[in-house]
Length: 163
Length: 163
DNA sequence: TCGTCTGATTACCCGTCGGTCAACAATTTT
DNA sequence: AAAATTGTTGACCGACGGGTAATCAGACGA
Image (cartoon, rainbow over all chains, first blue to last red; front, side, top):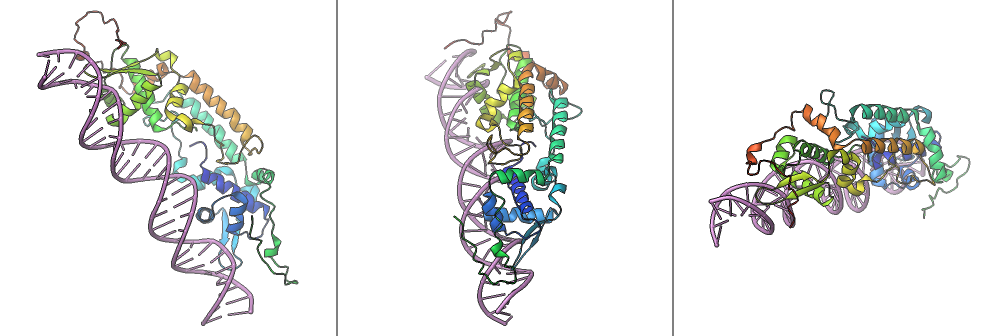
């Protein structure tokens, strides 16, 4: 259960990325560039997050993604459960398949407490908190507004092309 | 890093099993039956534990396995590191590949503390503690002494039987 | 309607983990 | 030496996570 998968890490970064782009649609391509996630892989992940109601996607011309709710209302626990699915079930710390309330392993009580502590931490941490981390990496503030021509100007929206 | 793998669980049960068979050689077949581990899979695992110096094996007729040290001196942390190997390296709780002391994730400090707490628990728990769990399952006390005809009334525990 | 932009989907590749099978090698008894 | 017993080893399999490529399908502007 414990260390979240790399895929969940991608999801967390992607959501943090969307948070930096307040209200505006963000392209999967941009999120991929910002977070360092392979675009095709990210695409599937984003779709899954759509199905789970964490973000909203719009396809076609001027499509993209937005957070479905304010970042402060999306906990990492929610993200973890959305991405990890059934793998998020509590397992015995020692890897004992037979460990149960009837047959408790030597670390059973300890692990129950720790697990709850960790879940509490994930519950208390939100996507908004992740923004600070993302900003450290200089990844969020892309804000390539050339994609959103201000209607009163007809500037060509050539999307740079990246490094 | 955290929930130990199923394989480590097998190793823990196997070692606990050997503990119940104080000093005597135990067959891989018996360990497999007692712990519910597939025999061929267990065989490789036992061999790995031999290489890591946790147990000693003897092949051929009247072969088997014994603990290399008293069960009280074998910590679960040692078992985990022996079985999991490099996978036991500390990873970011959130699955962030870029998480490092320079770019700390929102759970970095928290996770460092928790991880140490868990390692301490594993360090403090030994194979002797596992025996209680194994006994709960009624798995340990096989003790099929018919395999050990009393040629010498007092088994001098001559396990080493050097080459 | 057409062309283009965008996400969605399908198929496939690779490495690891848990697991199985079969052949092999070592040791002791006969 | 032969046979019986036991651990050892390599090949192989299926499932799953991470990753890639190519194609499909929806939305908008002209």
